[in-house]
Image (tube, rainbow, N blue to C red; front, side, top):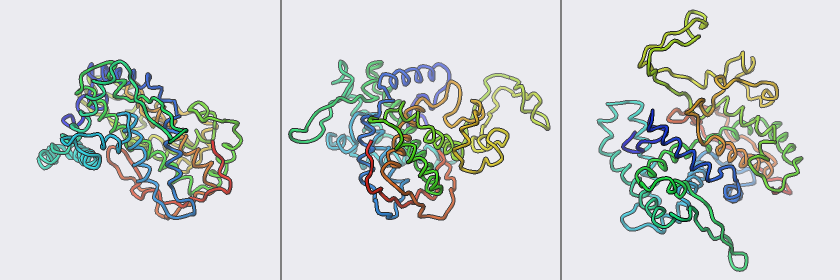
Length: 397
């Protein structure tokens, strides 16, 4: 994968990983990723574009597009369409960039899953795709490094006429430029940020709405709890106080973890205190070089942790369970847990809450069950086909 996305927090170990991880964490902290003002405005506009009369809509692809656009704005500071309108003739346009990004990721997946066989087939084609991605991102990284070294923010105009005003939004590129001027290093962080952000939050929202559409009583209960909140501006901290919303997100991630598994390689001979023997309670010897895989789908269905109904969507279970950090790991655990966890949960929570306030009913339009489509992330192969019905007096946040 490194020719495509370089050395970063996804693809490195040891000292390179420590440096990359620290750089990304510092940049995310400086951006204040719990601030939902910019995301909230984009989310409200997105909701306005959805059908409101029960018409069938597959939310999965439209959520993917929304979060991709939002992710690019977070990473590069502007909407994809605005970036494309400012690009030079030798820089790919938005459509070419998106096609190249998706194709480069597809062939990267093939190389991971099928190893040398896929590499023989994909090298030439993959090369052209990832170079197009590099040209697009490098162009805007160089602009940021050149023009924003003293002010890590971007001016964005809103409204028209007398209501026109400007605000300053910060991007990951502009924040990274405060720590390094190496455009290649910044490019790697941006691409790996895209890989981590592109489908993860959209899949979480899509999975959650898929479940809620099949549990109308929980949807109605969520609406009631949100309406009872005396909140004028919904911040990340305010959303965290809505117990049912948090329980719903936990339960969605439990049943359908975004990442199906994780692997670790033993750097030296070691002995785990348990996991061996016929009962799994004996010590387990792990030779150096062994790859240990952890399947989150199985982990999150342990009945001694989550109850005999572990296969059932029941958010209320989270009112009385507290699984340990190694029993529930939707964002991983330890040093390599997802650095964007808070950002993802806050944005997913805001969008679902906003939709619940806007839509009185959320109904399924597909009888097919959730079926895993396993790639770098795991998503529903059947999408999220629903019908939305707006309340007579939609309450705004």
